Image (cartoon, rainbow, N blue to C red; front, side, top):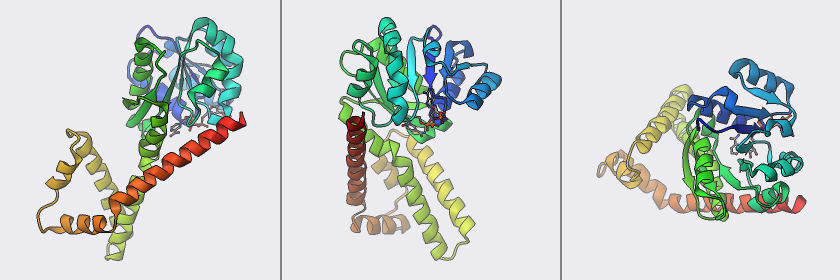
Length: 276
Ligand SMILES: NC(=O)c1ccc[n+]([C@@H]2O[C@H](COP(=O)([O-])OP(=O)(O)OC[C@H]3O[C@@H](n4cnc5c(N)ncnc54)[C@H](OP(=O)(O)O)[C@@H]3O)[C@@H](O)[C@H]2O)c1
């Protein structure tokens, strides 16, 4: 990334996480420009990170090879539309993290010929521990895809998906996924309290278990069934719990939940597309 000039439009939670990740991964502050509407956010960026930030988005993208669109989905059109001519002239890559905003919609704002790539990161990206689903239409060249992947790798892992529809499943799985684990951890905490543990004790046990299990899974070859088998001795306590969960339809329930999130993501995207 040593030769890339990059602009982040929208230095909110995700924009700042990406800037921090890129700096940690060796980008120099002078390679990054920011377009941000909030005075305080701009001042913090230049004071603390030495990053040039302006409220003039057209000026911010002037030298960029790649523009990260990190404003709220409802602001995406009003941010990209006025930049279309500049983006088309320089064929600047637009990498959008705006949830649910379709390539077709982004392309209609940027104009033909602008390489548009979508990314769906998740909240742990704010700690550099995210996972991002990426999709690019077939006409976007490999070198541009790789540039986008490098940007998103600065805040965690990346996974390419073959269709834009698959990004809705990414949103439902890893985008919303942290909430599913929090729900499980909360239910475990409450179960511990019902069985007599002090609430703080049950909470620490639950959260530390979530953390440790995540580390074990992440450091493994990805065989989750084997990992589970390793903590499940025959006739033991874990087996009793897992049997109870599965007999009550746990797997089917999770499948239905992820389906519901996928469906809802598509409904929201359709509403946003229809409203433009
Ligand atoms: N946060 C996450 O965990 C997460 C996960 C996946 C995807 N995303 C996506 O990332 C995007 C940003 O989310 P976020 O949580 O970072 O939102 P956010 O904290 O609200 O950040 C957006 C920033 O963009 C600024 N902005 C608004 N209009 C602008 C304009 N015309 N020019 C330049 N900057 C402008 C906002 O300022 P104002 O506050 O003044 O409007 C705000 O500082 C969203 O599209 C979201 O779907 C976020």
